[in-house]
Length: 114
Picture 1 (cartoon, rainbow, N blue to C red):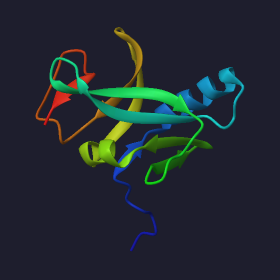
Picture 2: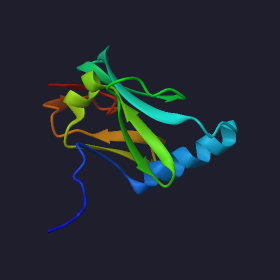
Picture 3: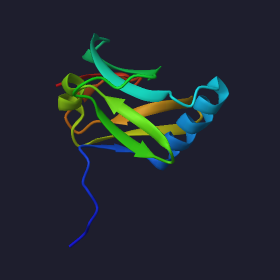
Picture 4: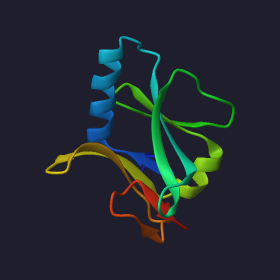
């Protein structure tokens, strides 16, 4: 039996590494990456990312490489089973969310429908 806890949302090594670099550029070690979902986008919901130095009541935090990913409870319900990753490619570099709950996504990958 494994002692590893299964988290409702994964925070990849690549994403944590990039967040760590961005936080060091900001010179504020208290910053955390907040991922959230809002209404909008071409598919109904869209992902958002921001730096935040607060953790609110009910927020879930995931730590990796000394940095934290923060998700509010409303957004988490749409992200369960997903992953926050960072990718660099021909389209540029960006944070991406892999979301098994999304029934469809738009071409840019930043909005989805349930």
